[in-house]
Amino acid sequence: MIDRVVVDFEKTFGTGIFLGVDPKMTREDKADPKSQQVQARDKDGVPKWTATVAVRYKNFENVKTENLTITINNRQKPYEAMPIGQTVAIDGLEMGIMKQDKGGFSIFFSAANIRPLQTGAAQAASQPKSQFEQAHS
Image 1 (cartoon, rainbow, N blue to C red):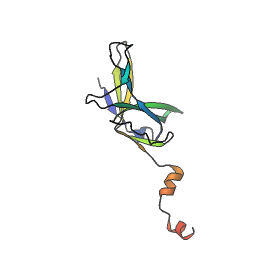
Image 2 (cartoon, rainbow, N blue to C red):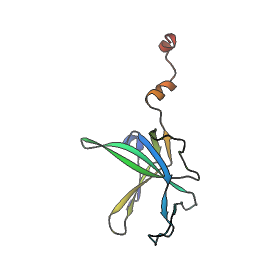
Image 3 (cartoon, helix red, strand yellow):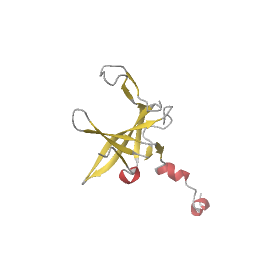
């Protein structure tokens, strides 16, 4: 069974809206559902974070919105300076499929990076003025 696939974020969703980042929590003792919650870490001890990004996609004739929760591994909290509502793209997005003990499957996402995009007025302001605009400003 395939357990992970690479997702071309820009072709699939275009852009997303950053909604925030929090520590990814897990049970200290995976066998005890009442054990204390602690921040999850990868095999190298690097803390895991969960970033939430809202995306839109077309489902037949309807446009749907979904929040993707994306795991990012980083020693320090990533994207603290990124404002909520920032338009973003995601690099190295992977979708994983995990079989559940009680039957069925769950889907999860991980990524290498989330990067801010300039849009609208911010993008226009950063573009150099044309010769016409320079002559008439």
